[in-house]
Amino acid sequence: MKRRIDIVIIALVVGLLTGCGGKSQQHPWNTLKECQDQNTDLSLQIQTLQTKNDQLTEQVATLSAMDIKTRLTALDTLEKIRIGKYTDFYDKDENGTKETLIVYLEPLDTVQDTTKAIGTVKIELWDLNASEDKAKLAEWTIGADELHTSWGGNIFAAYYRIKLPLETTPDKQKEYTLKVTFTDYLSGKVLTSQQVITVDK
Image 1: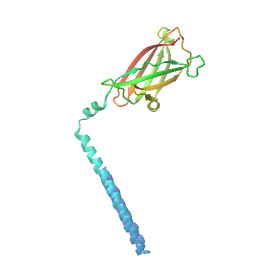
Image 2 (image 1 turned 30 degrees about the horizontal axis):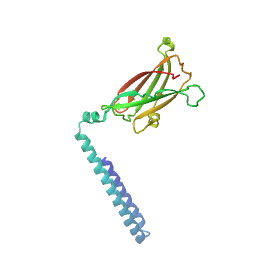
Image 3 (image 1 turned 60 degrees about the vertical axis):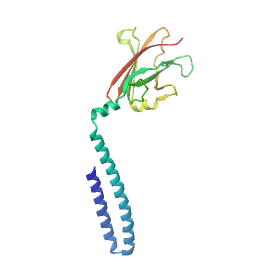
């Protein structure tokens, strides 16, 4: 990084001297004023680059002095995921048909506080009483960008609120199993949780 900054500084100085030399033959007094202004600008640029270089050098030195495992352990706070109690089938347009599954997902850290972990989520809906080839009813994968926009909550709780469209209407007489798999981008952990849900009568 320092070598790159030094090259940029040298290039700026050479360019300035070349420009001043070329113009001085035609307009010596005007060119002198221009060169003075350019010299001031160049000095400010050099100071800015030097400040950035010093900051990066200090940052590299600090990170190099820290044990990488210690840093990762401190950052790796995601312990488990929990399916929230409000997870259920919903009739969003109030037409009498529950066509939406809303999953409330709570990532929890080592002290059981909710944390906004970043990653991808796979959600599966199963009817475990059906035959093997018909047991999995639906599967959705939510990427990190989409998941980020679904974060919400209130003063009592925080969670990902994920709305999923259903292709078929859930049966009020059946129990369904919801399985959620969360892949954490920071630690690489793959965490799962599952819960039985029914259609409220």
